[in-house]
Length: 134
Image: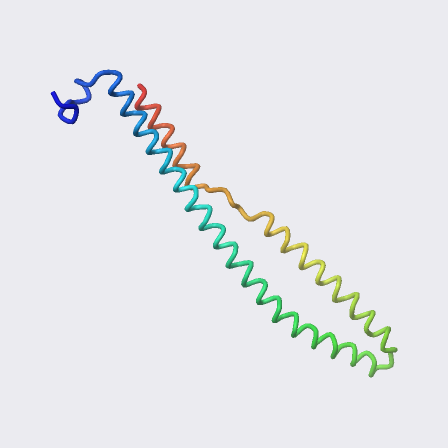
């Protein structure tokens, strides 16, 4: 009887193991493809967010410089020496910037890059292989 017409009961143990190996190999290849796809999706999303942060930061920086200059001029107008006004404003701006920087660096470090869909799929595949071995 040709192999394609054989039922599972008619096939030899060698045929069954060979089929299981082929299916397992196909499954592993599909999992690798899924993992690559998922990681690329997460990397692209992270890249878009980082780009938006950079553009927003550059625009905000220009506005902030203008505001800082205005605050220094106001303090000079109120009677502080120019160097004292610039130093005071510089210290305040540096403190705020340091706080924002540390907060956002921590958020980027906590970005979850784990391919969760792939991990779940691998668990399901493992169960399937174990069931096939019974």
